[in-house]
Image (cartoon, rainbow, N blue to C red; front, side, top):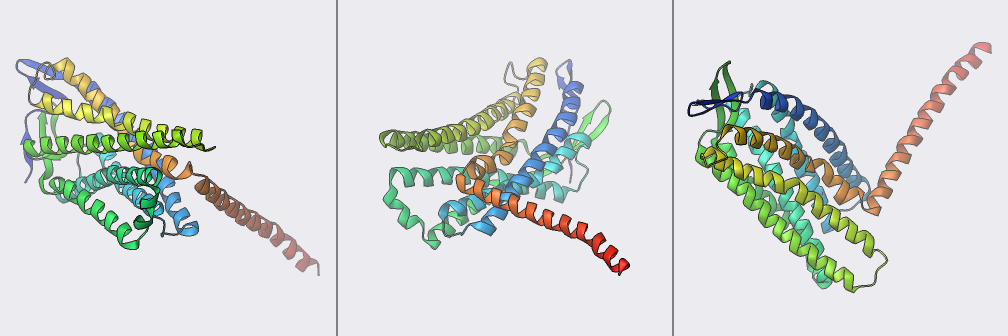
Length: 338
């Protein structure tokens, strides 16, 4: 059954006697979001599929790091799978069934939570390997690798479960007619989901920050020619994670306050600015799925070498195909002359 709301995110919101015109916001999201999501989807598919191909062709899965990279790539692809639906949503509203609304939201949040959790687990693994190198031996057991992966996926599914149970098609009533959205049917669960996302991020970022500080301290105490490169790589990973998700987490938290009419966020001008901030911050945060392959795979020397091998293999095949294509007319011509 469809829920119905009087206040709309598709053009006009009521603030007492004031009608807040948000047509410009709607036009912005209907153009910017599909274009940017198209770019993110393309880069994410190329990058993460290449990671899977490289792992399958050149790497073994006895390495815990490879297992985490494999899971992270799958997680990012799951997250990416939801983006085309949201791109369509911001152009035409929700035009699909209620079941698809639940499933798309559910799959999307599984990718969201599992991506953050695998990034965190990878960070903890690096921390243990660098700071407590003797602990790595126990972590290489098959049972350990399987257990960690299963726990992350089950936790992600559990965290995403409210979206499966409480997402539904919402009817928004506004001046130009009704429009449909795929949202939480109960405001309480919308707030719970928001707080849950913020808590997940803060916990993950706190753990990552602690681990990387300890890693940098350990590296600073050792004389290693790779030290500067490692420090730069760690700085990039933390910076991208921080810049991508902190603004988004802050904005969605402020939106819950605006929904509860907390001044001055409930005022028209503040609400409009918050909407713009939400869409921009979400675009930046969601692009992280296309950046993960760069920072966690292709920055590594081994993966770059594997990429060169794949490129050379493709070039050789292309050259052989061109040579065969060139030889074919010559063979036919010689056959005719004889």
